[in-house]
Length: 431
Ligand code: DSN
Image (cartoon, rainbow, N blue to C red; front, side, top):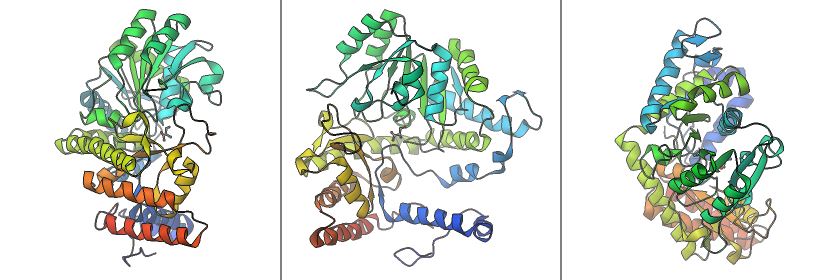
């Protein structure tokens, strides 16, 4: 397989030749995905490009090992080496985030969140969390998830005018419903969350404060935004977004909750931990503890702000007027198209982003009135604010091009060529 510049694509793993011989179809998928990453702009706010070191740990023989339990207390023998990996991951996470306790076993963000419910709530308990269409998450009480079926979700919202969390409403709902857990955290909220305000409300009603930091934990690691750790009883997170580690989850909590959290992960909701993934999390925590990563995190927020500004200059509207984080939520109704249209058109121009509901969205979720863009991956590739202004212009051109017309198709091809030129030598995973 060759890429558009004629370079032969190679995978950096020592055993790729073996995979090509054993399973050429899957080998081809891996090369195709590498080609996709190298040839386009990745703007999905929950994705990033891990380091080759993280990928090496993920592709290791630690994948073979069963290790139910925790370091020093496993149900199987032969765990000395994986114990070292998990202890390193735990210690690095605790140090990176200044947390009393870390559990690095959750397989994903949703698994970490399931464990929070298991540790702190009983079926039927009221849970106060951000409404999904206002930026929350499926596991924060959606009826299609265990969280909405087994618990009693009470949604809070953003203010219609400011599009910021309505803390008065959060407090009123907390006083009225006395939730067992209050959840702070979202997947499409571009602004900082006032953790102190949430703590105060939780204390007032005797609730557990759970911060779902899946999206922004990498910015916390890089000290680009304030940390929820001093305020929360428990913090759930993913390791693969701005944090740039392997796909996976983690939990951080106060010492008093350590036992409950560990038991909730294993044996209550999970079996054997994924030791290759835990080793890769350890690598990512080490990388995130460097000065270089701190500069990266600061650049991520600067780049997201620059992109939001560029999209506004191109006739779109940034929800809440901008962003403080790695993501921006963009209302594109001014272009006369849906979020789904924009997603499809950008995809044809090798720009990957997702449609997203905006607060009080009149459109159904599968069409949506907005797009969500994130700066984590492009910042990993070395993009700065000037580049992001160009990315904004490319998104605008692609979104305005009607792909079924000849002129639109030509424009999308021209944007794809400009994407390639903008990437230049900054392609993902260079040889
Ligand atoms: N799917 C993730 C996101 O894109 O935000 C959240 O689970």
